[in-house]
Length: 285
Image (cartoon, rainbow, N blue to C red; front, side, top):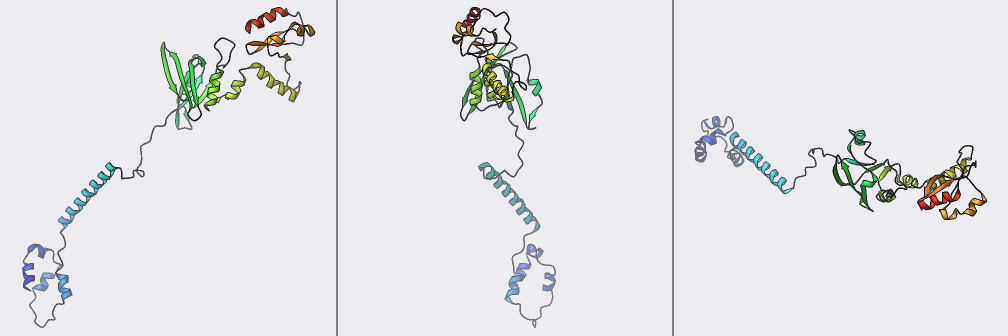
């Protein structure tokens, strides 16, 4: 009992006692009352609960500790940020290579346009003579471009996503054979308009005419009329004996391997000199 009185003299201990506890102690001591059980005495002697000020300090301390822990984990890369919203990443624009002369500015036709409403379009325009490329089995096609823009030489290298061809890939003029670039684009798997297959086939007019002959034989002359022509592999087969057997009126209509193909109209009026025509053919060979 003396122990309790000493404890009760402590003001901090008294402040944390349950309501009405001091009133029970101030009642007169009744010797006939039943003794307090050890369990009840231990219950009253439990350590005092921390005050509100101490609980607030503990809460602040735990918050600071938690913040420091998260900062340390973030610095060590242990926190997964996948759930947090990430800022939008700018999509890489799609490159369209337009093979055409400088008379048409194709960039203005694609200005403001997007692919699937998501990717911007970047236009690179040049002629066949201003291009070079290297194609790989798994690496696609790398194009090198050297063009003149307002008197300034512009050199760029890029991988096109699409190619728009607006020039002939083959001509009889010197240095106008760009079929190797068509093969390189096909090798790199680049999508084009028209198809690279059709562009390569149209490099040879006799080859195209041979495809027209197939349609002519399939549909007939009434549905698909075709101008009659005669093809020779070279001028060597066009000897005087062949012309003597049937003297046609020959007019140039195409070319094949730097040799003109000749067309034989059905009507023969004033045939030209055969030797003169052969001289022209040999000059092209």
